[in-house]
Every structure is written in C-alpha cells, then in structure tokens.
Length: 258
Image (cartoon, rainbow, N blue to C red; front, side):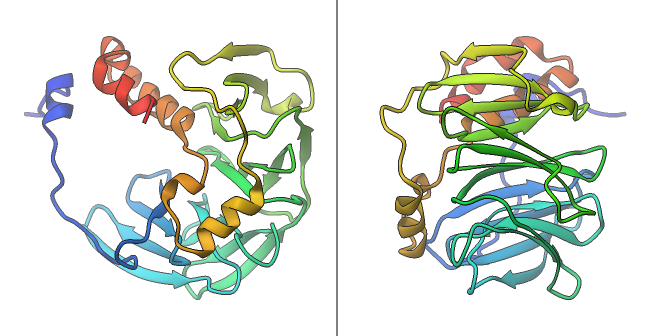
C-alpha cells in the first residue's frame, strides 16, 4: 500500500546520501533534474559539471569546462545531452553531448552574462535571459534564435509553466514578475505582479562583477538567486499533490525568500 503524501511527510524527509564530487568549499551554482526525474545535473564555480543517476544513487561522470567556465547546466529532452551558459571567453550557450563530451551546437546571441535558463518539458525549446536585457527563445535543433524579447531591466530569473506556453520573467531590481505567452513573447506581458515574498534589490550587480566572483570561486550569492523559479516549482509540486494549503505555509515561505 502506497504511503499518502502529506505536509508532515515532506517535512520529515532527510538526506539519504551525500556527494562531494565538486571541489571542496566551492559553491554549486545550479542543479537540474531531467524530465523523467531519473538524472540530476550540477554545475559549480570549480568549472565542472556532474551527472548523477538519482534512481541508483550514483555519480555517473564529471565534465570539465575550464576554457569556457560553466553555470546553469540544464538537461535537455534528448538523452545524454545538456545546455549550459559560459562564464569565460564569451556569452555563448553551449549544447553538449554527455556521452562523449563533444559540443553539438552553439547558441550565439547574448552579449552579456546569462542569468538564467529554462528548459521546456514537452518539446525541444528552452529560454534564456541575460544581463544584456534580453530574453531569448531557442530550439535545441537549430542554432538560430527563435524570438527575442528586449526588456526594460535585467531579467534575473525565468521559468516555464507545465504546459510550456507561459514564461514568467522576474526582475530583481523592480521586484516585478511578468507573465508572457511564449508564442507571442515579444508582446507586452498579459500579467504583471509585484512580488511581496521577495526583497527588492536597490542596485543590480554588473555582469563583470559576477564573472570576477566566479573566477575567484566566490560565494554562491555572486549569481542571481533563483527564488522565483524555486517558488514556482514548489507551488507546482504541492498543488499537483493536492497540498494547496501547504504552498503558503511557513516552510514554503522560507524557501521562497531564501
């Protein structure tokens, strides 16, 4: 008989295994599950990406990107592939085969450090945001940018809804979350919300400062905190399990503002 999922059960969960594959005392800047939930990908300021098999509790392999740096590594729909943003050389997003560590494709267009990547669960699309005040739509099967939204401010965090038809764009400076239809991303947002769960930032940290912190193995705060993305994913998880009341409880609030 299956154990019912409840708020108390979620709060009782504890780590079963710890991995220390990244260089000790260096921050991990991104973690990502594939659409099946079986594989996990991490990236860190030690300029390495690590692949894990969650079902087996096993570290599968390391991938190193010393020349270009790496952050925001995301698993794609195609098996054994990922995309990641560069922290050195240029601002190109790279499409990598995890099977033989070869580059499949380069996504060129951003002219400043990428702040976030969001992968679609249902197709080959992904969306990127950067310090150049643009949000771009891509298809992993083509090197050409599919659409570009020019924003008034820097988009700190982005996230796609479960249908992959709506993208949420959060601006840390103004503390505003805007919702856009992906098919018409260059149009004005159909909804904007002032986020009372996140503290506004008085000044935006320049992209150059982020690069310097990454190169010096600085603190994880050197990259934008993905509070909006984490909050949205938490809401999706709880709502899908019938735990709507738990979404706005104290533990979820702590996660959203972390």
